Amino acid sequence: MCGINGVYDLNNKNNIEATVNMMNKLIFHRGPDEDGLFIEKNKNFSIAMGMRRLSIIDLNYGKQPVYSRDKNQVLVFNGEIYNYKILKKKLIDEGIKFSTDSDTEVIMRLYEKYGVNSFAMLDGMFGFSLYDKSLDKIFICRDFFGEKPIYYFKENEKLYWSSELKSIINSLKKVPEISNQALSLYFQLTYIPAPYTIYKDIYKLEANSYIEFDCITQSLEILPIGNIIENKYDKNMSFQKAKSITYELVNESIKSRTISDVPIGTFLSGGVDSSIVSLCLSESTSIPIDTFSIGFEKKSFDESDKSQLVAKLIGSNHHQFTLSDKDLVNDLDRIILNYDEPFADPSALPTFLVSKVTQEHVKVALTGDGGDEVFGGYNKYYMGKMNHIYTQNIPSWIHKAMLPVTNLLLKDKSDNRGLKFKLNKLINSVSYDNNFYNNIISLGFQKSELQYLIQHKVLDKKILNYYIKNKPKTLKDFREIDKLVSLEGGLLVKVDRASMLNSLECRAPFLNKKLWNFTNQLPDNYLIKGWNKKYLLKESFKDYFPDKFLDKSKRGFGVPVGDWLRSSFRDELLSFIEVEFLKKQDLFNIDFINRIVLDHLSSKKDNSYKVWTFFCFQKWYKNQYRD
Image (cartoon, rainbow, N blue to C red):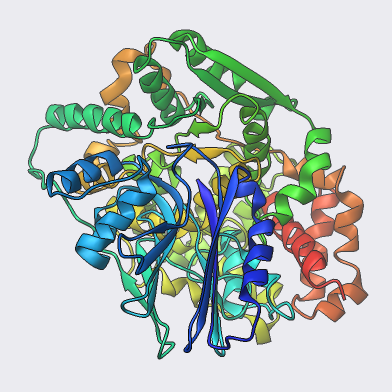
């Protein structure tokens, strides 16, 4: 696990070595063990590639950059290739020799043999750049799910790329302007999915894609990697057969994610996904594994009893920690600002803290991330069925007339996210033109609210159409959107930055191309049976847990930010709605945002998500645009 940086410059007089060294220093936390650097200046252009390494595999000989046999290709790599031993054996059988046991060398040898077609052969999480001197081209590549980040910026005769935005921003003469598209995305979703970033003209490389940059013509093309489907399953296979394959594929994936020359543990929340991962890991070794979880002082958010039950069941060395307001206040700025752009998932805070304590014991942690997307585990996946039932039985004019009444009746004054909160979210997501999924994934402000929040001149009301081009109808449609939007832009960003800030590598066994391709070939009712989410996964592992344990509801890493905004962060929040500041900022409709914030602070109405989204944006804004 590492971080990478790179610069291309048509002007040979610029000191690109100093630039890349500076970029490397800014991501030291991603790889504190060692660094690597490649510099080339020729008559046509200059190129520099750097990396920081967190040593996990082949500790002594996995150094970077890695070169081809003839030195015509050079590679810097961030991530892990889980099938590298299989690929290496294939290449050895074809007569190719290796000098290390690192997965980085396997990427290079594959490229030497297969060129860009080799990218689709990789199962893993990665972001890498490969300079091919023989073609005068740079290839910059991102993994299938988008677990590892790649940012890039093309300006005049330069190209910058990096694992984190901060390296690019600090290489520029001034901070770029805010992107209108990203601003509207952020306040709807609470995060910004690829290809956008908060900055105009700086982009994220989309998952399962690569950049092909021509060093002579300076043309930049984004190309899909493709998806090699190794097994095509019988669409009419029995549920029992599907259970058997699920059990095998999950265990196979977990086994492949345990290849490491350093200690491994698991995040254990007590939910379905992390419990299954912890169980499988514990059964693969003869010694107790280390498991890690956190609880909260506010009991309605604390579910540590579930993780303790699983830890006892599998006999792990369990490490339990309880969070207080003080823990968050101390680290809040460090956590939020490390995302380099607005990011408002409150669970980033406990994810950072569990990573912090985990890193004191192990260097790698397995997580349950991706289980909901792969196996159909979110409540929002009910929305298709519920929207159909609702709109077939309640005329639109009645719905419109009811909304003010239901909003009043279901108004919550405290941040408990119980039944009232869920019902209100459901009713406000109903759509008579089948745009309900746009509404349900809008965790901050609904599309209809954006025009009141954001000034018209910087508003892009149609930006979600980039991701949702056709109205989704099936569970597979919903899951594909989530892979593209909330998984890549939200969940994976959260875990990558929070864990890497602590120099901890997180691996997600459910994010496996084989598993994804398998579940995509199954009937929807295998994944969700009636109202039973993740039915196939739970049925495949239920015999290993106490009766009904996997059917218990799970909150996830819920955090009482609504309460904190009224207490610990109240004064700072009030400073963000000062009229003169908002006028100078010239982004928001002042009366509307003041009402949203003040209603929350006075407990007139619980606006936790909206206000936290605004709060995180303003913290980022004040840090970046100090003048």
